[in-house]
Image (cartoon, rainbow, N blue to C red):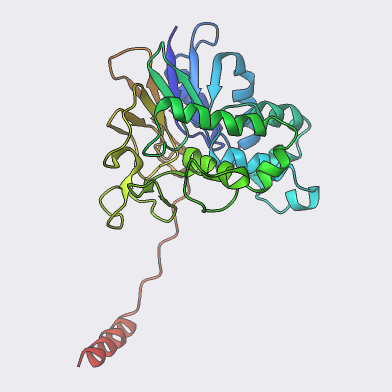
Length: 299
């Protein structure tokens, strides 16, 4: 059996199909791990979700922030659902929406295969979390997401506070856990997430670290594969394999083979993104006026 992890799809159907062809995926023999964010922005979220759902017996998915947002919007009134972008509306008003969303709601925040030696999350782990601790915290939220009080969970999951603490309870605890698993990029050594920093490491504010480089972080006994951070690109370090390579932004869609110690990565081109229109050039007279103003200001 061949096992492949695949980065964020985000509604990019054609790149997904190209990648499955490139790795010669056979659902009768192979297995896929999807790192989350199956939907949103790519323009074909319904078709992409249907494709992954059709492969459900041969794949596992960890929920991403866009997947959870879709589930939250699905609990609102139809008039509210019509206010979101057409890509998500295509799912929300599809004839098979209930089947697709019920299946999506049943997917985990974290997937662990100790025999294989890998764990998968969408975004990251809190600095002090071991794999076992992370599994327990993920399970807390998964039970509520699949239970009768899922609407309360989804309604209250939005927000940047509080930072994670084992003393948290109720909605704040759920929100903090969800933020770690689905929104983590940079954080402080104590685990406070900075939600504004999204660029490449080295340009962040002092005192912030990529979540996988925090000093004093917990030792983890499994390799981790994740997505979410497209600006990071393909990154392999500290036992972490980040494979969101920006397919939705015109980058690449990446598959990483997990069932071998040999590093094997397969990539295909991402979504065709129209080039941004060029910015209008300033006239020579306008540039002279601006230089004159700057000269007066510095005098």
